[in-house]
Length: 280
Length: 292
Image 1 (cartoon, each protein chain N blue to C red):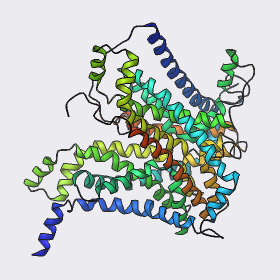
Image 2 (cartoon, each protein chain N blue to C red):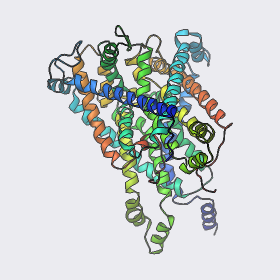
Image 3 (cartoon, each protein chain N blue to C red):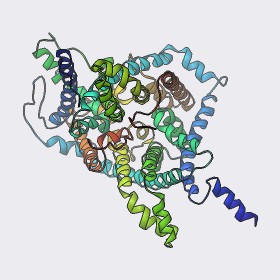
Image 4 (cartoon, rainbow over the protein chains, first blue to last red):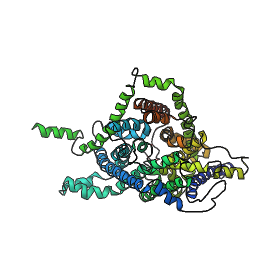
């Protein structure tokens, strides 16, 4: 470890930490403002609310019909996770194990949706889905959410499959394993940690995916984040505390899965396919 | 006789049963991504009325519409540069930390919570009676609260809150990918901190930073919910995604909507290509200290 001892580098180090600290303080402030407001009886022009209450959670749950919204959200999210998991793992397996002409093109196809703003491909896709009658429906929301989540699973799984020694599969073949039992008894147990990580990340991302769901969701196929958007958009119609109570409910559902996902992955893997660093 | 030889020939080129596993996923992508893209492209040149390019003429002749390009870039470029400018030095400090996990977990929160939640929180936090203004008035930096919501700065703040952690975590993964032995070698040869950064780290980091810039820019460029909720969606923060959304789903002119979406994709692609093109002028090679 190299440490510089000069005064300038001390000031520099202090400045860098100060900026990082300021950012975190503000970030916590933003989240705390929502949480505090959701428990406030009245909060106008003071540092903290006058009194605390939990009544907004009950009124938000009723006003925004959250029991059905939460139910629909999980239905949609788990369907997306299931479909993108099955298709993503099989696709990733073929891409990791075989070298065929046109493979680069296929990989590029799976990279593109992550590099293009969601609205750019979302608006044409939503138009197509509306024209075949899927607009506002459950399956419309599922299909539009597959576009970012399937490539995500593929790209997370390819390096994971590549690091499994192909000789293990060859050995299983030698001992007479068929394709079915090779997959079920050899590959699946080896792939399970990676799959779990990839699918939990897809789950967290799909719960929070606003833009695409917003384009296609109808009254019966809204996810929590879309309902939250409409509530904030129409702020003034309902009490602010009620909206923030809903935001806290949304936060808790997201954080539950995030904490679960963090048991398996490094936080930086949520944005990048970071290579595992050797511990130093 | 010919069938098995065909199969063997195909297998030799990499086509066998396992290769076919790529097909279901490929079919989904072709159906949900490639087909709609070309459908949209065709749709955008088949306007409700007028010549094939009428939608693009509509967009580029109406200042209310074409100015959205400038206002989106005016938000996305400064935000991306600010986020990256803060991410690099902080990532260099955090790299030396042994317990990064708590910090990275906190920073991943705004990314997973998403822009809608952050916008809702910022409306309270940055509001005239919010904690941000109160603290600044308390310490004497301000005489009276400043307006930070429903304007440019509200959207800017939301893009920093969600975009900085994103840029930081990507940069951190690139920075930790550089072999520490390289820095030790430079220090042994007498390079000070500034020289080590400018002459050793920066050249190695440029490719990674270019990719980070592109990904962070794509996120900022696609700004939509926070521009509506925290900004002035009829004024300075009427970004191009709002224009596309309004055309397609409020005026029910999907032809114009897809045309604007195509313009949006094209503008973003131009910026990404410029950045990636500039990257190729720098060093590209291994960041490990070992041979090969």
